[in-house]
Length: 97
Ligand SMILES: [Zn+2]
Ligand SMILES: [Zn+2]
Image (cartoon, rainbow, N blue to C red; front, side, top):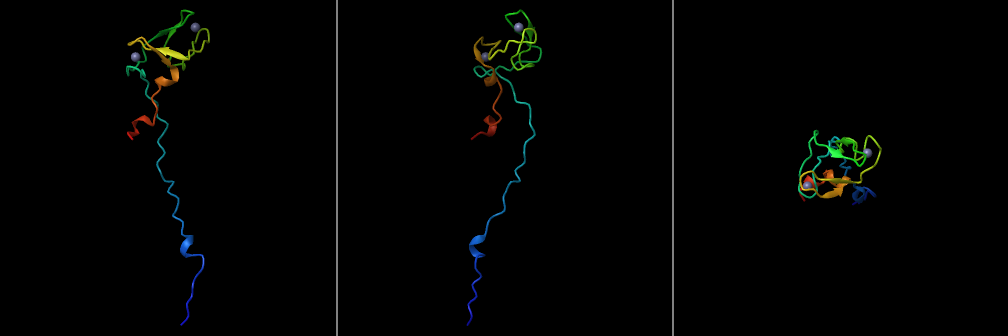
């Protein structure tokens, strides 16, 4: 009786990489107040110290007139200031862990 042991095959099994996860297209992040969840509309306006009035989310918090970068944005509903970045909803938030 001849026992043939094929070496290296039994424990060399590696599952194929399952990197077939669909990559979601870069969808536009929702913008809402991190405190009261108010969602600014395109026609909403913020005022700069230079008296320029514009939609701060069009420019990422940068005043188009004087170039001042507003790192915090005031909610037009609750009146509170929050970091501009905090207004952009985290895409991972709705994973619903
Ligand atoms: Zn300005
Ligand atoms: Zn608010």
